[in-house]
Length: 316
Image (spheres, rainbow, N blue to C red):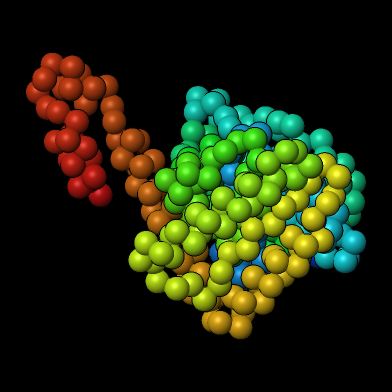
């Protein structure tokens, strides 16, 4: 754990835009160092200062390539960008691997871009338990746009809606997962839908299918939405449609501000962050009380998981 004076210096450096300091702070937060709580208290002051764009969708949809294009789009406007790319990882080692993200890393030398890969550490929902702390570090760093790219399970990524201001759901003509998206809840959480790889055959059908699915949702009795999610055809590889996508992301951000929904979403994000913290702390505390005697009692049948679990949670 760094000394108190070192922590204050680290915080000052992060707020001055020092990327090396931000990388150090992120490591402390992700590794749950003892100093993480002090960092969290300070960096939380910047919560809500950036537009958080969650990029989700099934594997093979081209999320990383699209993220690279969005970075380029924002940097052309001189907007500082942070990227948190959540990678699948072993629940044993907890390590992350930076998959096919060469187009993202092409921006790594840009002083206006901060990129970090985070391990999911077995957490479902395409995220990581440290996601909120990591977001706050980037907000304190001065990033005006923060892109959170999920693991890419395609089926259980609705958790991204608790983190992002704008949820960008990515599919392609070849995947044919529009009905899967409906089952996964993407139709409910998606703010902007993208049909990527628009140079492939079937683009128009995929766009029409998505628009039809959104219309069916309304016809099935859903209340009218103040924001009607657009469907944008994009080729992340060539850059076709990226400007149009950028305009839709800007329009959604303006809608959130104008309608007051931005404050409501921030409130939900704070609640989710609190839940993450409590769940993590309760789990670690309870599991820390599991000793050899408890395991022997389970093995001998003197107790059962439900009874032992309740007992462990009652302890102070």
